[in-house]
Image (cartoon, rainbow over all chains, first blue to last red; front, side, top):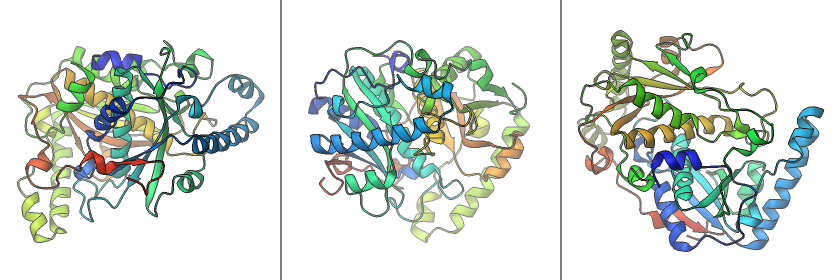
Length: 207
Length: 207
């Protein structure tokens, strides 16, 4: 699959998992793609915790369900009604969670390029996630990023040592299909912004 | 170009720019790829400031040169010697800077998925950068992320309004070739970590 096709087809998947579990060879290729991401000072600060124990998936799904209710309860009525039918995770259905974590101490004290912009450390780990996502799309494997969780809960759940931060829980599994239009656009949560509005020339004030 | 090929060929480019400027149609396709990135709550919080004014490129390059000296001066001797021959930017040679910025207010107060993990806002903008990078690679256009700068300097240089944060300066331009091995690995700054070390099962403590 071409880069542009993968970028176009890639969706944040919640409802389209088949229930099959991604096989190990495919999972390796996807993680290898993630591991080829650029990183500040070549620090490669990411790790991948592959979670398949049904009890762990269930515990995380229950936690996420609680967080969903908390979010719904603070929404104004129109937003709450639009939110109601939107599925926010496929934790147990996908059969595989990949927790992407970040180690800001990796590479020692002198990270080339991180002295002036310290956030580039964690940005590196996020770049790896997009590589993973596009490689998965080329394998017809769906990825759904779940962010309805409290970081300390997830840290405990998968026994992250001090100093290792969870960046994302990704639901990863084979899919029936990729939706043509993102869920949040299709279900009326938020429309697409035209690209022309996002491009500026020479300064931000001159679109 | 296939996704996997782009992921393998993609380099953080400093020295291989041809001096030609990327044409507008190609630049549009690359920015369109960035704009198709996933974003928390479909907030699409990114913008792209395309900088080509030679005076602006020169000013930024001069600032980066100062920051390079500051970094070198705090390195232990072995690291300073390894750092010396490493080129850290191609700001004027690439002919085009793309400053990727982040607007954390875009999408209003209720961002679906950002309530528990606020950092997912800025992570969305970083995902867009990796789309841009891979699309550029497929176009035989190099991208070099420069992070040797003080954020307030860059904010002033391109007149970012209050609340808009610079995330990256990307040097973007046609290249002679992509290096086979990343500069920082080839020049002895930091080697590649084996993927097996990055993969864990069920918990972080069980590699």
